[in-house]
Length: 425
Image: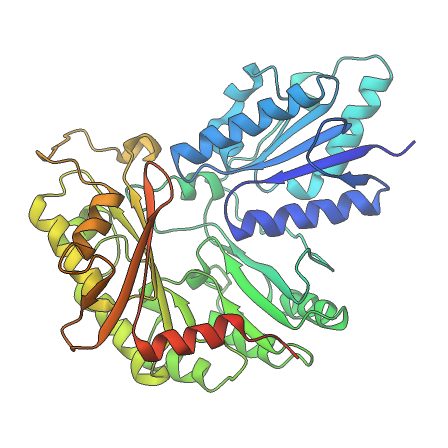
């Protein structure tokens, strides 16, 4: 009788891609994929650790799975697992712990575990419980691929893994390891298969997409721009979107090159984190606010009205009232299409880089405060930019620590609506 498997994903688009690849590996071995509900034989949760909230949600889903079927095999994989390490073995809700760069082996690990359980044996911790790789020294790109996706015409495509930036607030380099890139030929082959299956749009994603190709040896160097050109040449693909980019990759050459490819959609998510140079330096970001603005100006010079989106962290250690206001004013000046705002929580800072001295301001800064300050003058939903254009702005508090702002002028609003809503005929 076929075993039933329920899957649940937490976190980024890279995680989503990896879980789709795992699903197809399971289907190829004869497993039946069922909804994440009571009654499944196996539950696989692909976890996230980018925030303490992501950690909590990962634990909740693992315990929920065990409650739905106490006899089921609960598999925990992904970044939360990688960061938490072997201490998760003490959690009785988890049967298998599979870290990053071992997901390609998940089906084999699961089948070995099920075989020992059916034989009445109790798997040992060393062989069947915890499967973790030291990501700080791993340089191997984990090969996973998909031939279909839940989307009707759009497919997310992982082309890069790992990060070398080591921002002081981020644990991802420890959970995902160093930069590792997928070979261009492998990416193109997968894009061709997706195009033949009817997919007309691909989204190139990675943990630090801008670093694509940095790990390739001399003489075999390939850049993200090279990869985009190769994907652009695939027949049947009508749209190409890019995941989050670092400002440093935006040069006049890069902007003009991708603008010359009509398939590339004019939407760019450029991570900001703060508009204050002092805060950016403490975050170990590799640019200044002035350099960031120059990159936005370059894109607008080439595209006219691209959709620019970003992320901002508020309440970072030692952030003064002046730096907070400086960051708020910077975001206002750039006129982003959408801004995601997060309140800093030190629990997720990597231990070697945690701030020992904590300076707290008199007024706690939060995502909601940032939004309120941005829209408090005059009508709460309308404000005037320095260029005297009318910019519509609205904010929505998503949780205790996150919020989002959407702002656009008349021209960009029309462009963005067409860009996001136009259907592929």
